[in-house]
Amino acid sequence: MSFFRKKLKSEYSDHINAPLVGLGLKKGSEIWFDYFNEHRLFFERLFKIPNSNSYKKQLKELVINQLKENIDQKLIEDQQLDFQLFLRFFASGIIEFIEIYISDNTYTKEDFVKQIIPLLKGIYK
Image (cartoon, rainbow, N blue to C red; front, side, top):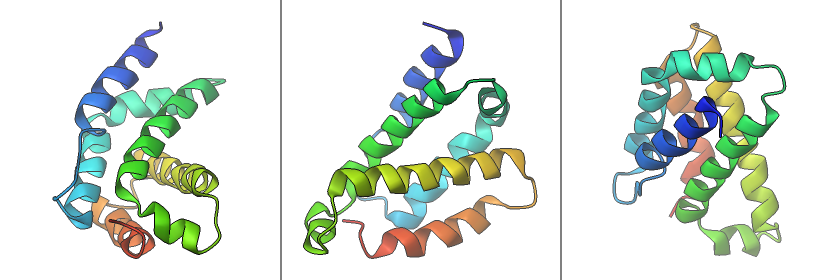
């Protein structure tokens, strides 16, 4: 297992994938972006690796697992949406947010939190 894969799996899983239940959407989002900011150099390098799709896929799976625990599945399915497809779609958007946050200093953590809260607010448990 490569250095990046080990680091991604162990650190992300331990820190970010820990239950955020009870912290609220704003605080949970801030914790996510704080983590990516603290490990900015690692993720800058990760996203620049040619053929980094396998790493992004692992990160996406970790994000999906976190979303799965916090999104109201019944609410999504009541809208006649496939929950697994919804999770994959939403996780892809979060990965894109992370890439922009890491690579573009134009936006602050607060900018991203302001964007993500309205997107999650109606579907978050």
